[in-house]
Image (tube, helix red, strand yellow):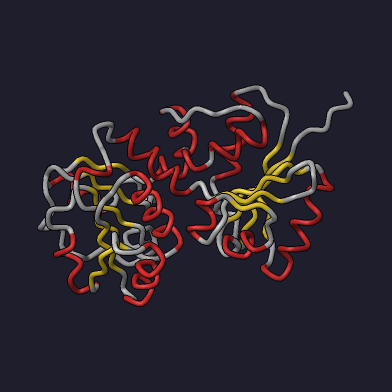
Length: 277
């Protein structure tokens, strides 16, 4: 055996909680691919040095998570349009010519999850309402705009962050004050929570959803718990709901394909594996 076994992993700080190693190693085993995927806790001050060293150790690429997504983009040689638009990278490919190729697959994962969970969903069906203006929100806004949403309503507890997204993405974005967030969902066809509100250990999501249309598709990026209070309220209002786990799974597929040469399938068995304690 003279072939090098490809290595990949996820870099973050902290990173022990990441489900990516479980997911990627499940796919490697399922498809009989020789390879390994490991978690790596790297301090921000060491990121540049780590990215320079990893290809020499046999790594073909890595995922990057908090707090490295913005810095990883700046340290890359080749950047996809969507990663540049979002201003962050979550997937790096170490090319044979020595260059680092940066991509952001969060928006792709978001759209594929919606399409799987709500096959009738189309972005152009009506206004989209998005809670939150962090990194995940930027990916969601970019994906919705690209998919054909004509109006995106955006709110954040700190209004300036929402205004910053509007300044970059243009007149498709309408910013609402957080205290008016309940009004934002009136007539919305797509409603998305990108905040951590409702996550295990975080404050509850307390915005009123009384104005929800039963025709709306509602999704929460939080997947712990899988059924958040936000989704339960939406389901009670008659909406189609899509949990956040699929986004985690789908955003991982492009990287796996680039690193290991196989497009993995996201199915019920994959979900079940990741949900195992």
